[in-house]
Length: 302
Image 1 (cartoon, helix red, strand yellow):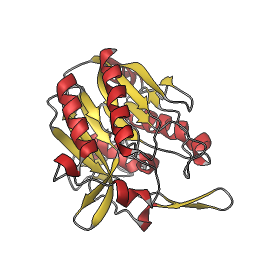
Image 2 (spheres, one colour):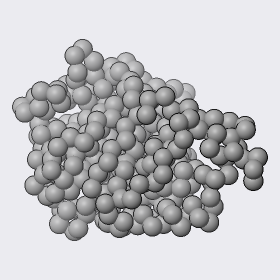
Image 3 (cartoon, rainbow, N blue to C red):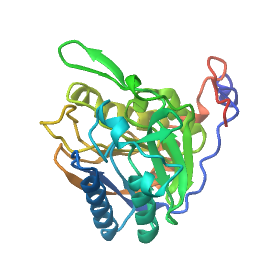
């Protein structure tokens, strides 16, 4: 055991898991249908959030790019100036107001954000007071080319974010990624080392990679780091230019699927019990068995 030297496996040392404000609560994953009508999408999302809160959800997740079509042509048209707020950001304003009025934590999926001359794929996280707790700009842009299957390049219109995002909320410490970010285990490891209880990934995996990798990656990130993973995607629209896989899911800290769904529009209500994290880490104490003599994860931005 002395050869492990776990304290040397990471610089700076990993944080102890903080005590969350709530140890057990309900989470809602709102798998929404998305249309080209932005006003309809906003009101539709609000109705789903309100219905979830009425069922006791303290944390609500929305899908990736829920206020308009997922396409390079649509990103500029549906983008919002989050910093300006008000009429320049109706989706943002709705999320802030509904989080405050319902006193919930809201991981607002993602919307296209306009900032200076750039466009970002951005997730806004709101506290129960309606204030912006954090803003994650998708770090890893989705550029893919599988011949005969799917070709998409977010980098044609979007700019990559530069910062990991960890937020302390009324329902614990949350690390945020967007869709393609889930493929990069280093980001999830960093969030775990910063004391996250839960990783949230709004996403819109497609019909090619979705069946292969969507659940696999969620379970891997949860099992790798012994924490909860929650994902939320849009409902499938077979007539859309980009067809989403759906299958929003909650995974526990042993990689177990707690709740999931198919591709239709629905809202999943499930329970998160953070005591499971400590139980799993006692049974399989990975944090004490890292080989500091063999590898090191360096977190330069904390």
